[in-house]
Amino acid sequence: MKKMGRKNKIIIYIILIIMSFIMLVPFAWMVLTAFKTVGESTQMDPFVIFPSKFRVDNFVKVLHNVNFGRLYFNTIMMIALRVLCAVLTATLAGYAFARLQFKGRDFMFGLVLFQMMIPSQIFIIPQYVMVSKLGWTNSLLGLLFPGLVSAFGTFLLRQAYMGLPKELEEAARLDGCNIGQTFLFIMAPLTKSAMVALGIFTAVFAYKDLMWPMIVCPDTNKTTLASALSKMQGQFSSNYPELMAAALIACLPMIILYVIFQKQFIEGIATSGGKL
Image (tube, rainbow, N blue to C red; front, side, top):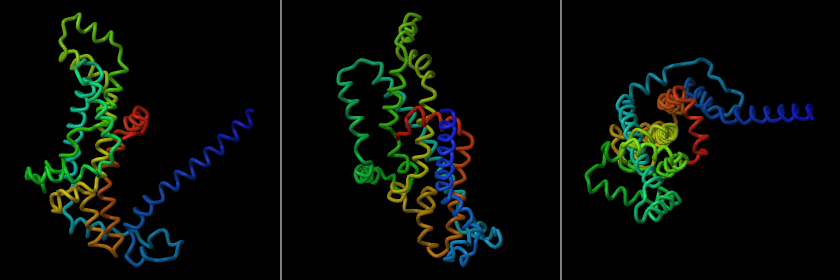
């Protein structure tokens, strides 16, 4: 049995290594292509994997032609504000749905769950109409608009509050705390891991969001990195090295974010079950 267990472990490790290698191939191809010439990047020979010489010309050209400073600013501001709004509203709504008794609570929470089942693309037209009437197109407010609230975040925080014992609230009430103080000083700090998980997932979702920035911010200087990269694809359709160099530069914020918050990111997946 011990030999069989060890054999199974070896097979599982081999499968995981192969799957990891397959998942890393696109990223490795992007990095290597960023250092190639146009001719090397379009060769059909499958054995030409590495560039003949690692060049930085593509990065220099991309940094000269694209205003990455402005795009980084737009993206980081949009992500920061979306995370702040999503965590704040989800924390308040989750606590209300989990702990407060009011008329229509279950019906309202049912609407939140129903909203999670509808594809987000359905809301794009009414959201654009509202943003357009408010005069928020080509602005940070327009980018932020769909991320003001999060149905998934409300569900996640409600589950976190539901898992806390009622005795904590009762003890706080006996000590003289009102509802606001109980929420702010007792209950909210205990859901910190769920808040961090929601913040990380919101940041990742906001970073890779492509459709909404393309619609609401057609101006390249006012849009996000993902949207600007999609426009480069048309501008440099035959120049894959410059396109991959730009993609590599655009990936840096999320790589840094993952390195810094790797532990919280893994805990967040375990907490939420990987759902968003």
